[in-house]
Image (cartoon, rainbow over all chains, first blue to last red; front, side, top):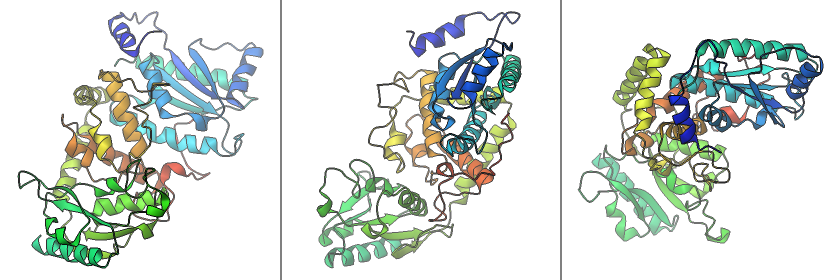
Length: 151
Length: 278
């Protein structure tokens, strides 16, 4: 495994060809809604950009901003946090806490000059396979427009 | 200033003579006679060590909490609780309100010798030993600098902070002075998993400084000690004061102002709005 220093050097030295460059998006999905929604998108044979690397968590309330920073450090150009709609959380209120956290973390990123659009959040329920495909498409386009994230 | 020093000495002498407290935490002149340093007075005969002047800025709440804190130490049996009197500046008082809200200790364990400046603080000091003017000059300076940063584009701001964070030598002085950094095991010291790598590279420094800023969001009392102790002069105060403003704007919460209010990031409202969510 590469240390983050090596990753940093690699990403700084690798020439990016804008015509072929595809963003890398790390997606933190809650086990109960968005992960199942993404699964549904797959079983429904929906087509969406192959830019997301999905990481399954029990709840969006488990998303520590450390995960997000670490993702950026390890080569993510964008991070997508997705969970149950408000009121549908399997643990009643995890997504409410996550909402406040992501809001504040975006403000912090913006203040130090990292475009807050690199951190996206969505509510995708287990039945919303098509919404998942749409969200990934939109997020990919947005991050693509921002270009690669450098240290 | 002399009057405040006199008041502190008088109250400290009284408390120690009456055996109402075991230790008084305050300030004493430093080795150079200019910069004061914290002092722990446990005998009435030694209260004349205590001083107060405008250079007394240390947030003494730090000594109450954490693994070795006077009120939370795990190295001391619970029947040997030390009773503490603390010389508390406005920011120290705000920090104590927030620490009480985080259930770090009981209000009754502590006697506060408060120095107030008229800014709202959600706690009554047991004894008011002095009144000082609010430090509006420093506030103005922070506001001006923040506005300057806000005027920049994202890329310029990134470059500005990149320069700041690349100076960081990871001495963790900011953590060591902060009363809110009382975790028994700091995330920066963990290595299984190692979330924050130790070598002072730019990304690692950003990781450390941003996570610390985030951990203080909705808690920071604005004492500015992290900024003061930083040996490479990273303007940490700018980030913390900005996050204070953001929390107030989004949730109407100001740490240290209302002892009953839930800390902003430990609470939620079902109707919270966050326009960015898809």
